[in-house]
Length: 418
Ligand code: UD1
Image (cartoon, rainbow, N blue to C red; front, side, top):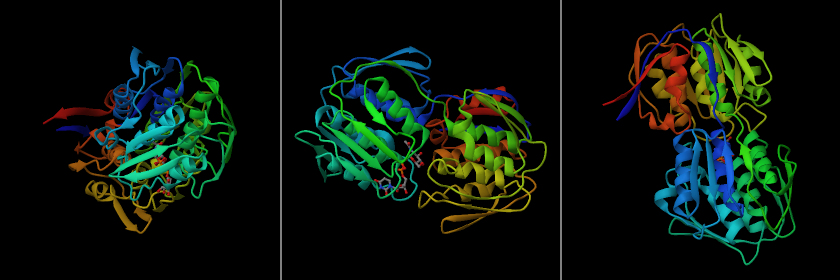
């Protein structure tokens, strides 16, 4: 069993390079199977979720070649299978993107219900509603989602909830459908735009990604190009908070500052000094953070994927903060673990009340999901003494080379194997 051992209360100073965005990469990898010819993807993060998506792609017949540490070539020309097994799909939520991509390529897809972080109910009714709007018949049988169409025909669709996954999945299915598809109440996250930009670079005709109406004119063929994945806004935000809790001074490089706007504004309210450059942000934190009020929302609101991490930071703020989860029904499972380090947290339905303490103290803790793990890491970096974080596979699903990146900033952290 692997753990992180963090000897906290060290000031973090220096530069860190942010990797490619997990949530863009896990969608663009399946999207590549819509191309007739090989694609080259750059800025691919070295994380577990990406490895799993690549394995699924290889299992159905694609050829994946690693060109360098962060560049891969995907040749999808020999894919013949449109079924994704339970064994593969249970490992990762984003395996559902194979449903839209395979449906778009073969007019047929069959995939086990996806797994992933347990954040409460994670329905896929909006994905299904979208495929049906394109003329597909979708059935759920023995834990498998089966989608089939004689041919896919563009349609109009209004999503009942703003869903990143449904927006991307229906875009994947619609890109080669006959005619025009209009998606209303679409998600506007940077990774939705990145998937659209990737598909457009292959010859797709997608207009409006990044707004809440996306128009997709179906095309017959897509052909491979070289494409670079956007930087990971959540990894960047996590390092911004590492600077805050350690009274540090970190320059976070290879980011798109616009994507970080909601995080930047919020941490400035909490007393951080943030300097923006073209593709970097510097976060300095000479004083103790100040409490605030936050509600997570779809982009451009404050991201739910930063909620556990900001609670970790606010647990050290002066005053009482109120953080409300506006996206997921159950995203407070980390609270008990954070409390072991001395955080004073009280959950009430979808809100956590954070009574700031002067300092946190080391204790053994367990990551319960990816961002919960990131929150524990932030807290452990601030805490006095040596904290052991167990179940770090959750953290490694989404953070590329996190130990080395933190060590370079002056953290005392090692990965241990017991
Ligand atoms: C993606 C991200 C995840 C992030 C989330 C919200 C990936 C791989 N994961 O997850 O890290 O926390 O966006 O920013 O990109 N919903 C429905 N029906 C559906 C689909 C969703 O009711 O068919 C609801 C969900 O229960 C949730 C909300 O819509 O309450 C948002 O979910 P969604 O945006 O779809 O999240 P994911 O795409 O799964």
